[in-house]
Every structure is written in structure tokens, then in C-alpha cells.
Amino acid sequence: MKGENKMAFVSSRARQAQFRIYGLFLLSDGKWTAEEELCLRNIAGQMELSCEEVEKTIQYCQGLPIKEGDNAELIIQIIDEALGFPAPEKTFGCSASKEDAAMTIAKGLLLKTSMIAGTIANQINWHVDLQTEVIWTLINLGYADAEYSEPEKKVVRHLVKVWNIKEEIVSEFVDTAETILLLTKQIEWLKSVGLSYEETKKRLETVEQQIQLMFDNIQATISEADAV
Image (cartoon, rainbow, N blue to C red; front, side):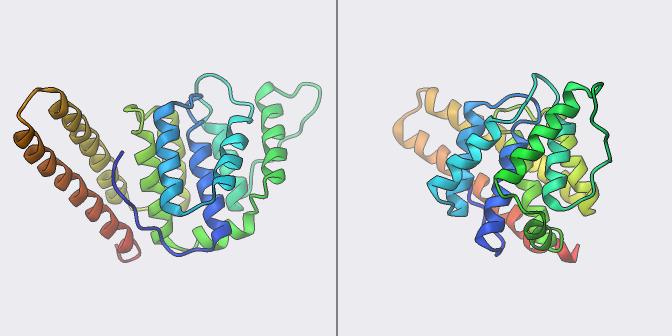
């Protein structure tokens, strides 16, 4: 999806960790589509992350023990661990489930990739504008493949709850993402319908201006989130 999101100021290491949360989110529904990865890479460009960090993050996420279908619980636990939130105590023994074993592996990989809880917690958990930025980006990613799935919604709802994000802000984000998706489809239609060059250009400019206005409004919402 189009648009540039001005990022809140945080340390480069926290940005890297934040980007990994976005990567983890893509695994919520057990799928990693080309459209989602393209969107993720565009976000990395806006965040000015190095190619090395981007590839490391993608390799890390794609190496997690993800099953087909709903992986929201596992992804939530990994993100919570990174954010410094306490995880439910579990005893792993001979009768441990595959999900428990997967969680153990995932946590090990998490530590190896240096997602340090303190860094993220200090930067994200205490900055409302950064929290809302993350929520918007996740919702935007959810619509990258035109299907904001229920597992993806679970992850967003969890973060909205733990960060105490206002429901009206979340509703605005969802409505905006849905509208931008429709406008993006309209752009594709205009390019294929066979209008004259001048007419196509005129209509495309109008739609692109609408999309940019929506991104500007979202940025204003993010910037003013701590005052809502």
C-alpha cells in the first residue's frame, strides 16, 4: 500500500526491534505472501534500516516453527517477550504439546537475534505516538494482501489492550486502511480501462491525492495520540 509514514524518533536498535515485530506479525495467519513482504520491505526503506538488518529479520521470521493457520497465540507470546511483558508460566515435560515446543524454540531464536526486552520496552511502552504508529503499521500490513485475517486482528487487539490504545483511533485506522485498499484497486482499474492518456492521468492524480490526504490524516492522529 502506498504512502509514507513519518516515524517517531527512537534509537536505531529499537527501530530494528520494531521492524522485527512487523515481520512477526506477518506470520500470524501462517502465511507469508509476496504482497506482504513487499510492503514490509517498503516499511524498512522508510525506517532507513540496513539491507543486512532487513534480511536478518526476514530470515529469522521465516525460520520460526510456524504451522498452517492461526499462529496468533505464538506470535503474541514472542512479541510480549520482546516488549518485556510477563509470559504465562509453563512446564515443559514429556507431555508438552507441539505448540509448547514451538514456543521454546521460538524463544531461543528470539534471544539469538538480540531482541532485547529492555530496549523495546523503554522506547515503545512509554511513547503513545510510537505505539499508535506500530498499530497503524500492523493494520496496514494486514491489508497488504487484501485480507486482514482474524489471527492478525488478534495480535492487533492484544497490543491495543496492553498499550491501552483508544478504540476510536483503532477504528479510524481500520476504516482508513479499507478505504485506501479500495482506492488502490481503483488506480489499477483506471490503468486498465482504456481511457485517454490525459483523462487517465487526471483521474489518477485525483485518487492519489485522496490517498495522500488519508496518510496525512493518519500521521496527524499518530502525532496527537497522547493528547486523545
